[in-house]
Length: 221
Image (cartoon, rainbow, N blue to C red; front, side):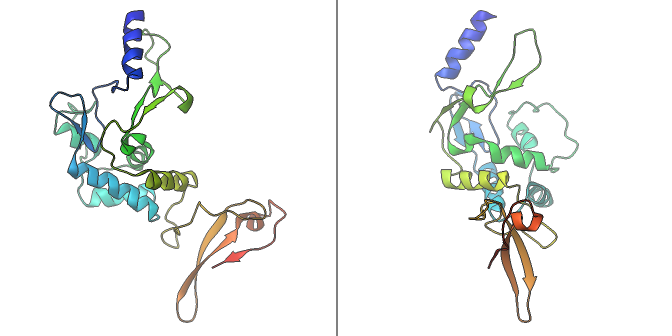
């Protein structure tokens, strides 16, 4: 057990992928030593990030991908004999879920980086997997071609942190989850209204709306 753990640690610290599992958007080269871009899947990954920036939430993105008959990641990889579910029978090969979209949006691997030690076990006898924090993970940059640039990735993480979604008034605004009141620090809420000639959009201070902070009303077109 100690020898296996030592070998595992040594491999992970060298920057090599710790598992033989490739993620959606990539495929192994012939020697299984390098991730190569899979054009078809990579295009879907890029669309998912772009749609998130445009204000679509995971549920709406998943619904769109299902309607377009895009294979779910596990079913797509299974075509190439890849993935942990390659021998599984899928109930719906086009049944994208919001959780699958969220997992794609979180992966730093799409920046071209290898991320090792994301999980750990207390011992070889235990089947329980512990999710490691960023302090225990190791990131090796530029180990394979990137699908997403850093600016796009950072913007998506900021949007996800603010949990922007489609609402009853339509898609959320471009700046939803990114604007904060300069006086009290609260989020700025996105609104839409309609005038005599055309519709309009504006943001107001959430602190004033909820009466949780001593703030005055703010209105930004």
